Image (tube, rainbow, N blue to C red; front, side, top):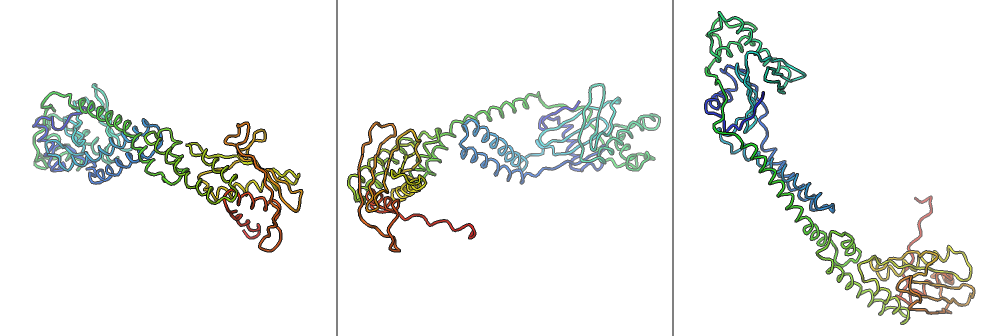
Amino acid sequence: MLRTIDYAQLDDDTKTYLRAVRNARGNGSPGVFLAGSAGLPAVAFLLGLVILPLFVWAGYSSNKAAWANAMLQTAGVMLGGWLIVYAVRRWTASPDKYVGKFFYFDPQHVYVGAGEQLQYARLDEETSVEPVGSNGLRFESEDGRFDLSLPDRGSALYAANYYDAIDHLNADPERWGNLSAAQLGAAAKYMVRNEQPPASLQEVDLDIDHVPEDVRPKRGGGAGFLRYLILLAVGAGVFFAFKTSNPPVRDAANFAAVKKDSPAELRHYLLNENNTAHRDEVTKQIAALYDKPIADVRAKGTDPELREGLAKLLDSLRGPDTPAVSLRVTDTGGMLSSWSDALRVRIADGIGTAVGKDYIVFGKPPDEKPAHIEIKYSTADPKGLTWTIDMRLTPDDDKPYLSANRTNTQTVANPNGLPLTPSEAVYQDVMTRMVGSAPAAPPPLPPDDDW
């Protein structure tokens, strides 16, 4: 069966033999040498430099659970770190520790170079060797069976023919029985290349005339298992380190990314329950940001009672919750409800524009509940407009904190000289009294055929 040993632990006899075969790339050796991939340490190093910080950054940038981000980051550190360490070890490896990448078949052993480790198997006279699949080579004996994946089908056939040639030579002991293992292997390789046995040993190419009988470690094993335990411990340590550091690092990044002059973004920070370090600070910042719009309303509104009523409502929205305010507008004259709905949208947009849409968000209330702001107006009297307003801090309040009646008997004209529509006149009057001006309506959408 195929065994694995650290190359550094290999006995000196076998190590010297394999080093000679590898340096000669099999020329003059008694066996078949197939060079494997030498690897690309520079590519591995660059990949490691990309993978490691990328996975760490992705974990710190995600809002997933801390353990899930820690798993991703640990995978990146272990993989990226392994690639970097592999490249550095390749560049600094000594000949006594790095065997290389190759397959080598001689009369007594199979060797597979795997970097800092060597795989090997002892062959006996009963071992059968045959190619399998597209590039496989199968070894089977009483001890068991193993397969090797060679670079291509031709390599597998070449190695199988080499062992067939050895069997052929061993079948003629009168002529070949006195050969050493090295001479037997060299004669078999000659036979595969020339499709006939050599006439004499003078025809074979043999510079390495010694084949080790046994592969032996210098000292007892166990280092490989210890290595895996160390890797497992490192991985666990990295995981717990990231699991502990992810929440505060992500919290700090979220806080740094927030625009400190935007109540909406500050509230977005509070919506993430994983953000805990700056909650009190953010709550105070939101409250402080309301000072200016409240002061503007008090300074610009023309109606002391109404502007103070709106300022009180804004003052109640300083908290961390979404500043949602319900608004209902009703035409008591029985006109089309779509007109009063349009006026509600105009007033909501106007107040939002004047105060700041981050500071107050309007919505339509349920039919069965009162609104924060209730406006009722009548278009029955063409000479004047009468409207009332009720304001509550919450829709569940039994009584409004502000109830006011207002009448506008002034004739206000459009730029074209025509009187304003009743709803437009109400809009102008409400806005001027509460915030000091009436923001213009947005331009109408163009007709369909202009799109």
